[in-house]
Image (tube, rainbow, N blue to C red; front, side, top):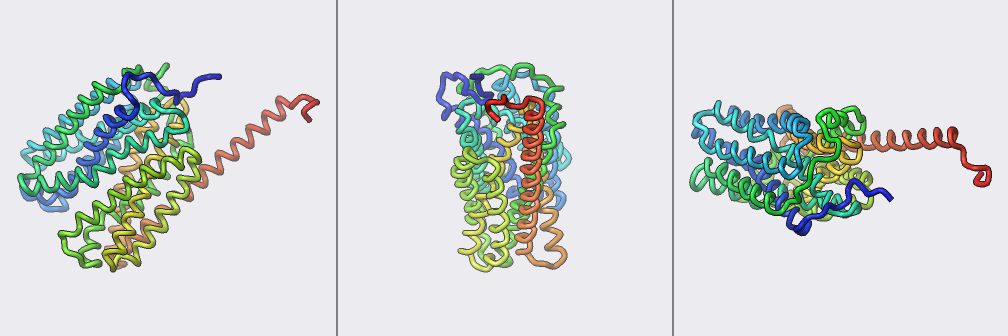
Length: 413
């Protein structure tokens, strides 16, 4: 019997320790991605720019992710995975550290763009390393444990970086991320298995992932379906203050509840995904649609909105499920497909707030972001159903062809 491509690889350390090292990198990335939003007022004032202009700094990081994920993954196709992870996290730490010393807005833009370049490639390669450590029936759980670093960052890393920015200056927030990045480099160098690149790996083979329609469909499911989560999250603080009418002091606690929901989802959902991947993804998108719709009627109460935000956060486990789906449909070009998941994630981060902002600007109210989120989640569900239908149609066609070309023996008819 041939070995599975997910066959666990020998490593001198337990899979749990390796996953912890990978999750530490995810923690660093999650902290800088989300904390930059909360540090925006501080660096905007210090760099003498207004808030909308400072928002371009966040967009520059997202653009770096979208651009860097495919380019770095393709160019480094022949590099051993541990070596690549070390370089990616070292580059991440370097440019986050330099961000702490940015003298002007223009320098900040450039450095945040460069900081975003390793983001998607790191998650893509780290996911492949994670699944290589466990049996086939636990690969979603392995990816989910690695992603816990990202979700825990929304609970611990982001509030701490925000406190640090308020207490001693925003530059220390980026300095903290750089230190966590260097710690990740040390952990990966010490714990990760020293595996070579996949046999036959090449830039051309990685680009082959782009010829598979299921890769594009899965990326579209993430870009649209995930957009709903960001439509709500982006305007959550304003909704809490203007609709729920809570004190600004309470806002970070509700944001932390969102992070707790994401963390809980990434612990529980992968167990189901390892048993039924696509039904779990469909269930998550339907869950997100219902939770987003509930947001429109629960925002008047602090208890109601807190419960709803937790439920919406749980839907964030879709990223883990789609990560594994991309590995399945990309054939021999898994690295690029896995990295592109985070390009899609950042496209969702642009699409959701854009449509949510349009709904608010047209006078539908702050809670209208819930309806935007529900529609985007249903859009992602529609694309998922198309993907499943195409899979079944192709299997039926192949089965019919094999039956006609290689009919069963007369004794089996």
